Length: 137
Image (cartoon, one colour):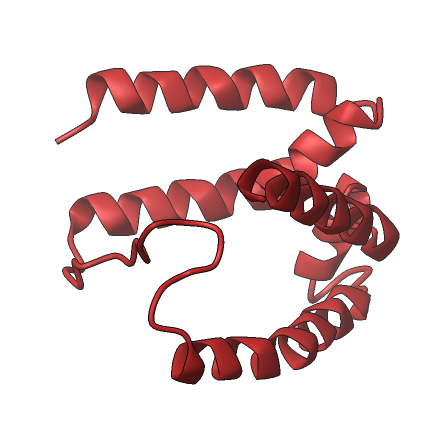
C-alpha cells in the first residue's frame, strides 16, 4: 500500500500543479509581481487547497494514533529559529521568485518537458547535494 499510495498521491499532486499553472514560471512570477502584472489566481489555488485539506487533516489529527502508510508519524521536533533557517528560507524565496519554480512544480515541469525546468532541476539537485554534503549539521 505504501508505494502505490505514494505513486497515486504524487500523480494527483503533479496533475494539480499542472492544472493550477504552478508548472509555468511566468504564472508564479506574475503572482509575486504586486506592482506589475499581478495575477491573483494562485491565491485562489492556495485557498482551494487549504479548504480541501483542512477537514481530512482535522479528522486524521483527532482520530488516528498512527499513520496508515508508515510505522510512525515523523514530525519535526525543533522550534528553533536560527540563522540557518532564516538564510535557507530567504534563499528558497529568492530562488522561487527569480526562477518561478519551487521543487515540486519544477519536477512536474521537468517530467512534462516544459522548457526552463530542464535547467532548473539539475541545478536544484546540485544545490541539494551541496547542502547535504557541505552544510549538514
